[in-house]
Image 1: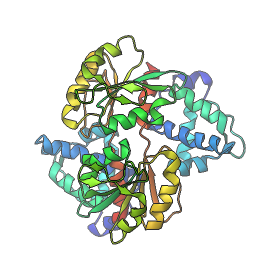
Image 2: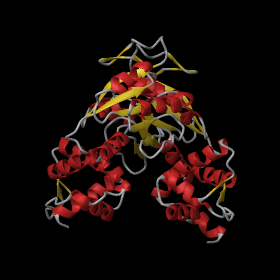
Image 3: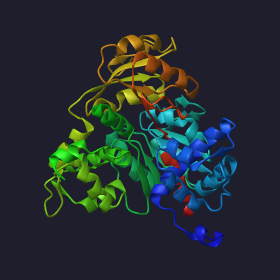
Length: 213
Length: 213
């Protein structure tokens, strides 16, 4: 596949979903001073098979594979480039309860180009409270705070009953990418990308295996 | 496929990982009084293709498909049975910070047979605090609390630096299923099943698509 061609190739959604995981594994290698990783080792850590890893990596362009595997630094750069790590994405979190606070302070929400710029709530008892370096703002200030931001990402960490209204508020404010942690399936029209995260999904997978034993 | 055969069939890990999501979609139908759902509708909601849905469902045994789709109640029962919803799983959470508190109170951790029986921390300033109906216990009490529990599931909601020690503590206490929310990849020997959850992974997927526009 020529450089010209792969740049135009649309990466399938399933492959995109695995890229952050591959990067996490690769960064783990970097931290442990491991310089080369095989597709088999990557596959095991990512819980897929090695053919999948090799096929996924065709979307990353030329990786200059060594006999024994991939160069970890090259791989990190190639994945990061695809994921757009040279960009920055301001994150606005709605809901300053335990989950909203946990996300505001979590390393993953303040790395790889992400940074939490605002935490919002409707509860007067919570507005004004300090969470990390931020002060909880009134939800009504969200729209104003979005103005002028490039590529803002909205995060729903509200109770389920408030989730739908909050999504609508975010869309009206011009946010087109939303991550939903509320335990309901949110749907929007196609111009807005919503990803629903279910904190208990992995719990149910664990239970499945417990059930087999 | 006869009843005899499908019972013995090992369900591939990828299929298992989709079952909780299918159930969530099906429950959403139940709540909205929708009685029948097609594989196409399920596929769209689960972001897979409909052939995958139909293939996945072969592992659920006979679903008595109607012309227009699957009976939602039959589907809910079949998936729940596979996921072992007739069982109960006590959940023990290590780390009573914002994330541990959010998980303790989250609906998904207190439904479908799961119930949080203990929340633990090492910080004397936190031990004894009330979170929902629970009191935060000293981490040293975890081992004692596991004794006599059937199918306990341990959850790591500690800072990353404490995660590895906490996993070892859980394994020594006899916990064989662990859900790790700390942002490090935990590995254990094969007798213990660990699933690593990355809260920022979906954020990175959203960013990928923002990067394309």
